[in-house]
Length: 94
Length: 153
Image (cartoon, rainbow over all chains, first blue to last red; front, side, top):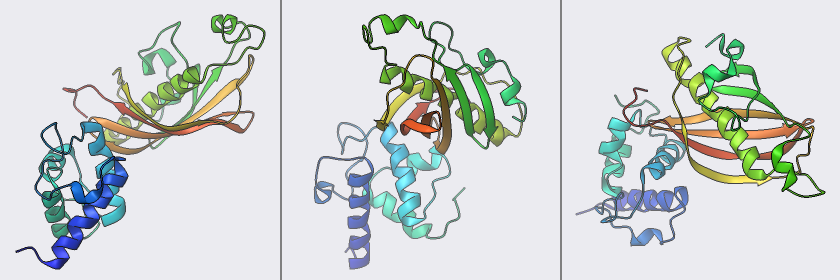
């Protein structure tokens, strides 16, 4: 079962996503495990990924060092939350 | 990269007349470029934009900013590689964000364009850019440029 900290983090991430890519849906409509990219998911595109990378660094100090890391992290709210928890420092992951 | 501003502009940009909107690069540092474009008094487009009241179209100001931004991307990658290797890539304009046009640009004006790469997440470059005439900002905003897939960055 999801802890309240985890749930709070996911809510923050959803708000960050909506703000960063100017989504026209409320944050609570994004499910934690729903794919962010592609027509089956939230519908973000690859240029939106750039905005998410910038927002993640600005709001959480979590730096995605390159696109191969990005492809693993920017999958869903859940995978972003895991990345933030594991990379709370300013250091980029390799 | 040290010699970037001495290079011929045609080596830095794939654009050619009549669609070359940068005349000269005057400074380069850390993915940040300042470039000039002089607007001739008899540019062809003044015949239609507008008859009797010539104004430089905003889209062409954005094009100048985009071309300067392409050079900024070259400079950014040069810095990463720590070399001055020529990079003839075409960078595609992928997003124009919140560009504001603050003043008219007239025949005879010289655009001073500053473009700085603020984020690189391959294949995308986010660039902050501004355009001044006589030290006054005439346009500013952000662009995203894309380096075509398959090229090593």
